[in-house]
Length: 117
Picture 1 (cartoon, rainbow, N blue to C red):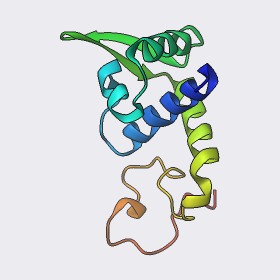
Picture 2 (cartoon, rainbow, N blue to C red; picture 1 turned 180 degrees about the horizontal axis):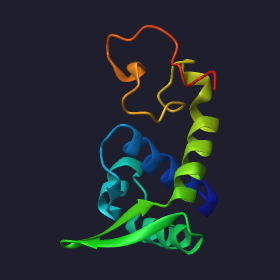
Picture 3 (tube, helix red, strand yellow; picture 1 turned 90 degrees about the vertical axis):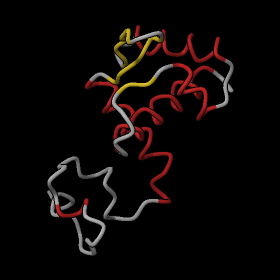
Picture 4 (cartoon, one colour; picture 1 turned 45 degrees about the vertical axis):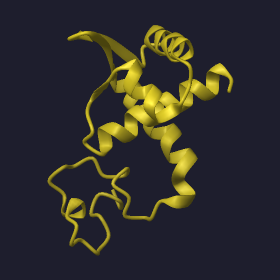
């Protein structure tokens, strides 16, 4: 896997985790559980993404944590959508960031009101 693929995967993963309410921050160890990439490669990629302004490094407890910046959220969303759009329905929550929207309800079966904006 080349460095650009790793960057794509980390941005997509952090965007997905955020959207699924799994957390706004992730440690290198958490990322490694999902991507199965050597820790040294993950750390280097996190540094590169931080240098590009797509991640904010934080320190929490015993481990460093990383959070997407606003630019990182947009880039993660773009890359996630490009990668997974063939598998997503029109009512995808990726399109709707309004947590109070009816489309986030398990009973919702219509079209999200934000998709037509």
